[in-house]
Image: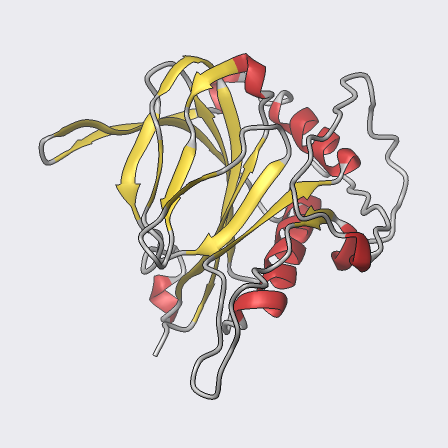
Amino acid sequence: MSWQFEFNNIDEKEIVDVIEKVNLNDDKENDGEEIDVNKESMALFAPKREDVVDDLYHKYCDPYMNFSLSEQNLNLLTNLVYSFKEDEWSQDRYDYEDTKDYRYVDIIGLCEDEDGDVYELVENLFEHVNDNNFDYDIHGDLIDVQILRYKEGGNYNWHADYGISRNSKEGMTRKLSMSIQLSDESSYEGGELEWIDYSARHVTLAKNIGAGVVFDSRLPHKANPLKSGERFALIAWISGPPLR
């Protein structure tokens, strides 16, 4: 399947410092028209910290960057999520050491050939954040994208993504990770995405639909247990040569 994305024009000077909720119009359908892809205006990005001053020997790098998808992109992603049939979902549920249900989630892996517009959106998000923050050596053709569905009791305990990649045979490893909320916060309870930054502070992703984050794949993170309802999310990773 192919989904066309629209990137709304946003003046960079007006990028918000607080991620606002996106008003999702459930009745809005994709009209299939061709659109212009603009990396700089696909989402509203939170600004980098201004209270950290670089010096001669140190250059500060935020361990993560929050954003909020444009309404059109969000509508198209949610339409994609609800187009899947039940038999397309694959359950990933396992214990690890003494932790029962270390991971419990339903997964659909997206294919770049069939969902090229999704991959283009994800690649542009990664490149925007990397260019403005990390400056890592990453490869746009080494991207993994999945849609997740957490049901009651679903979770993923503490883990990190770095060093885990389907492209490891090519000597590549995951450098940056991404998560985007695709469920309205009123439709579920619990299930917060939580991570630990470079300073050992615990941070959670906003639960409003369309809220997203790109973060260093080395950061420990988890999806807290879902108490009720269903939570959908898009997750992705981009790979490159190992850090040296």
